Length: 145
Image 1: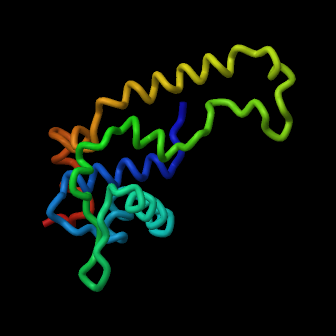
Image 2: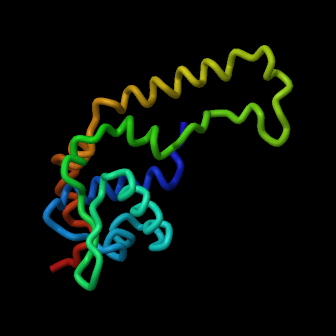
Image 3: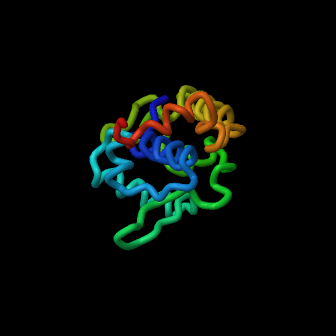
């Protein structure tokens, strides 16, 4: 299974915000830190804010930070939310699969996908930003001194 790009970016942003809970992070700093285009990152940040995982502060000295309680959010639940109802295979796409009526693969892949999410359920945003990766996260977006 492969996560979509927005989910990947969202997880990286949340990890960075969790490692730097006292900092307001600008979109430009985040984009540079996680090496993604600013416009794409802004859309992801907006989605995370709507999900209640990031707080935003507007204005000249504004930015985003991890919302209160977000460090305890389940990665499994978050990935389910960000990925949506997509399945591993698209059996009914532009050219529907001729095996669709009696195929057992789709059901097996659904079970495997849910097992993937379930394995992420006990992991939290805070867990992903804990040492030793915390030290790496703290260096991102900071100019060398």
